[in-house]
Length: 247
Length: 299
View 1 (spheres, one colour):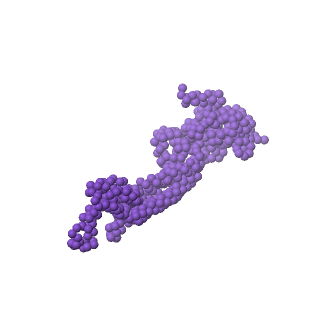
View 2 (tube, chains in turn yellow, brown):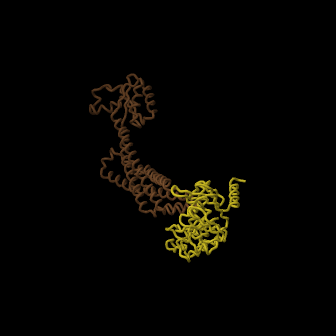
View 3 (cartoon, chains in turn cyan, blue):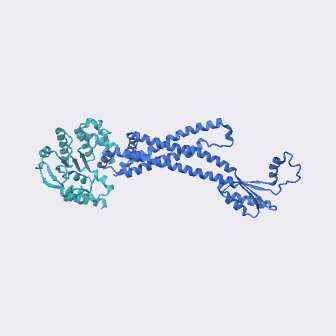
């Protein structure tokens, strides 16, 4: 067995035993103030749909940054898709991130390019052949309901449409995990629901979906697993849970 | 790297120039100004050097022999001189030739009448021309060490002045070139730094999607190289036109100069200037951008 196969087997074993996302007693401190995460242990299985809820300063954003390997934990271990992120070398990070789809509250689209280019961009990065890109992009745009708008500049789109472009970009490389950081934060209720329905559809096709949100109504209505955080610790973790009130 | 990625990088490199067009223009203009000055200095200095070289070629050392030295020995010494690296040419002048050359200057056309015999008998000599006048001293020392050599005539001042001027020109050129290059590198790195700060958000997005360092950095480096290339090509074209015009003008208006001033042709100037300018332009573009990308782009 080659070293590569051995490593793959090891990753598969970690996923099987601990889940596709696994945090083991993870703390993260910045140079000033109290720790952003304090001894968090958490396991998410492949194919799950999980909400992470909590107010500002609860540690949600730090959690997302740790999962993206934008930050490293001060103590404890973070495993994503079987990779121990502390051991990931700088040059291995791009390849790791290609298996993660990510969507942000502020969409983060390339403003000077059109819808097609924004989505194709994610495929160019992974060096997908041009012929495949020309086939894949229209298909994914159709999935998110933007088939007719591929030529539009992103600034001509509504917030909901921009988030769909971001979603298409996150999904085009068929990631194992989709991280959505406040995906409905800038959207009206109608668009918010459309995005959430799309996320659910994606999840039904097998992608693990992790949504960080403030949106009480959606969390309560969708009846998914809800992990609530406060001041850097997990205060509740419920299957088919709801939004926990602060008071 | 796949061909499609290469094309993408090239396309982005060009696109970067246009997205950042005012800064790109400023960089191109400054590099063009620097390389224009460089080209101008080179054209002037190369011509000056050419004039000096022509003057140097005229500097000679004359070697005389003791009376009684056999013709065979003189010829042997002539061959020894010719074999030395600093010697460009050796000309033998027999005493009869010397008398025939000098006689008329001093005694008129009938110079031979009062002299039944050659008064310069035994004045057989070699006129030695050098490839590099700064080597004159060592050649003279060596010539004086030959037993049969009676006298070596040379002008120390001419040789020293010529090699001194040569050295001065080399130092001045080097100084000017170093300053111009430093200014250009600074400017390119500034342009790329501004480009990076303008596109910080885009770079972050690329990182989140999983772009490699190379994929993020390459368009910026290419942008720097393209700016350098355009900044080099522009002054080359201007200097080409100017030089051609100046050469034609001088030759037409001051025909009298052409007797002793030998101007280099436009081809001679550009056979050196074109590759050097283009290389320098692309080189400073590369260095300026890669150092900035490393400094400002932590991907």
